[in-house]
Length: 440
Ligand SMILES: Cc1cc2nc3c(=O)[nH]c(=O)nc-3n(C[C@H](O)[C@H](O)[C@H](O)COP(=O)(O)OP(=O)(O)OC[C@H]3O[C@@H](n4cnc5c(N)ncnc54)[C@H](O)[C@@H]3O)c2cc1C
Image (tube, rainbow, N blue to C red; front, side):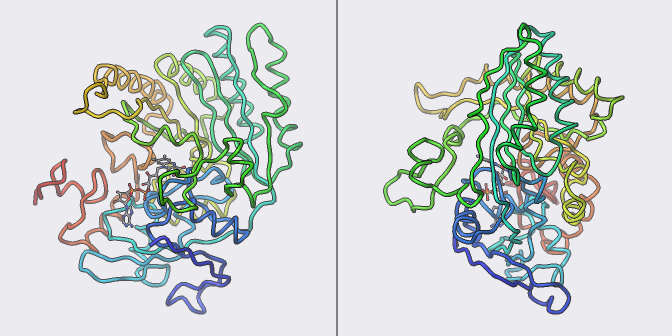
């Protein structure tokens, strides 16, 4: 179920005459994004909105909403869904799209996955590929907490003025040791344009050499032809920019960003996320936002994932996102703030590889305190279901906001007996928290 088929003029079943044919790709539910990008971009010269990490599955990501590095330009992965083949709880294989089972189709677009049926195939819209993709990576060390506080003001101000737009995505990480790591990507810009964009920010840092030490060199800004971005070319492999699954017999196309190796088998100590509304960037509210970010970093590091909030995206991207089951809070958010702590693979029953439970508890408390500081300016922030707190209180509102009741109605219609259970997904209140016992 990893097949990928490109269509030049796809019309969803039953929609003939009602919708314009679109370029699209049909993917088996077992496909990973690495397979999708190989078919659509490297070989097909197009762009499909998927996830940032190539090891993530197409089916789970689309059903939870799904962000990629360039989502500020191309939107949610779920919004790109044109049609799904799905086996519902009654055993029927159904085609769901805007014309056939539109309610099920809506629920599959960001409703969480696993609770409405088993998806066997997804057809996603293929966009025109931008000419270039690129990245900006550098680190800034602040000399004191006060300088770090000022650094937060500078970067938030710069973000709001210069890079909250469809060209830019990914992250700025604010660490509790007064270090800021910029790991941003861009699309549709030449390298020189990207460098010009960041120069005023670098100049501002340069004016305070006693406060900031900047690990930047021109080579920290790179760009490449978009068509080769996901291709495991020999040069990229030799330079360590991309890795290949080296297990015997692994398919050629199993490639991944080297940084993701550390996530295989990792044990999370704590994980919380919150969408930060764009109105916090208004002049009057920005000081409070910066204060909250600084206060949060006194407890734990905060990563601002700008591509995981849609404020700054084009109107058609926002309109398409409105047609999904995701929490509408995503539309007005400029970033998803994530606090995470974990350790490398650990196994409770293997001597010498046990989890560090005490450390985990301490880090989990510090993450809660960091998020508490952010909630002072964003009291009911909403959170992205696929990158969130396993113990999220009020998860229905957090993950789906005003869409939850409608989602529950879809689940009642397609799974009236409550066959499917997923922790903190629609309808899961009918089951004990461990998923073993039906309660009604
Ligand atoms: C290393 C890593 C990087 C990530 N990067 C991103 C990112 O860049 N952007 C982003 O938005 N998210 C990201 N995520 C989160 C990711 O979106 C979710 O983990 C997502 O659920 C993964 O889908 P999957 O199919 O791989 O996972 P699975 O664990 O297989 O599934 C996740 C959920 O979806 C359901 N599901 C899966 N397949 C089906 C199916 N065929 N039919 C019905 N239900 C199904 C399952 O029931 C399960 O509840 C990342 C996660 C990891 C671990």
